[in-house]
Image (tube, rainbow, N blue to C red; front, top):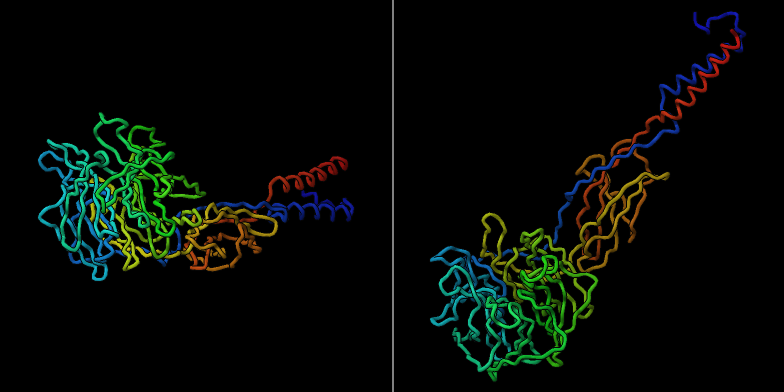
Length: 511
């Protein structure tokens, strides 16, 4: 018989037993108000919205030069308002050679988006990675150095130390044969210093290991077309011995800007690729390293030129060996000498790396040609792209974190990797009950955290975007929080144990 049915118990004791049973039942079958919150998080790495503003536009001329690679194959002729391309290489096994070097000359007219093969009867020998620059005062394109086929095939070597000048008006290449010149080299970089009327050359390397200080150079040279002379400069401080670096002349500041480059296999892999920024002043014969808080990652074979309209050095792509394997970058950066800052332009569309880049003064566009896509085998391209400098929305906020606080769900984050040249003005919080179906919850100022005061009782997904004066950037990856009000076993067991203990003691006293 149940102890509740014992009619000999006093009435108040029966009520006491009933109360204890009710307490136990409530604790067993109902969640405790002191319940514990269980949180789970899931990060979705893909963005849920796409960027809508782009700077790079692929052009589709009816004909174009054949696929090739090798930077500094192009320059821009201001008088004729045309981009000039010379040579380049294509990997193909012919007669024991590992590359085919073209000897063609092409012009590109942006207004008609057309390439024209204008190869004259006499041209320099085919090559890749030469120094190439347009001398505006003489209206001539100056070429020096590059990689050419080695005698006997099977490899490549540096071109003869010849200086060539191309006249677009007469479509003629002329071997200038100056009395002195830089030593033979490939992957050197050249720009034209407008204020000084000099072509400036820096660096490069040779495959002739018998040459003193080979294989990489850190010498600076200046070429004067009017006197047909090369002058070796003698700066006290200078950049590292590098090749295939980016080089552009900033007209407003009258400085030649150098970035990156490679020292080849003669340094540890971690130090082989550079991301230093240097400025050269011909008037004082001085190189000055520019220390910036942010810069492109270390790389070489970088496409770079000066955008006259925006007063920015534009850099695109480049290559670095990550984990011993080549990695091609497709990012676009802008360098402002006035503020000594690099800006990641956050361009959502892009061309391909290992290409040639030049600024078209008439169209106010960067013109890019060629490139490659790494793979097995690597694909070499003959694409033509145009880039117009413009500010973009920022990239997505980083390091999104979520937690449950007493007053709601708390989100924290850090600013995007880039504001794309325009300061961030707002952060936008998105929320939804399903992945990919988020709606705007609130718009904040320039902060790094937000607490959603509503405590959800199911799964909620959050994502955050940043906004600047140009527009809203992409959403961050989604983060998911699941909150359940489950009972707390330790608290309930304690109450139940105490209640049962009292009943047992009471029964023992009665017995």
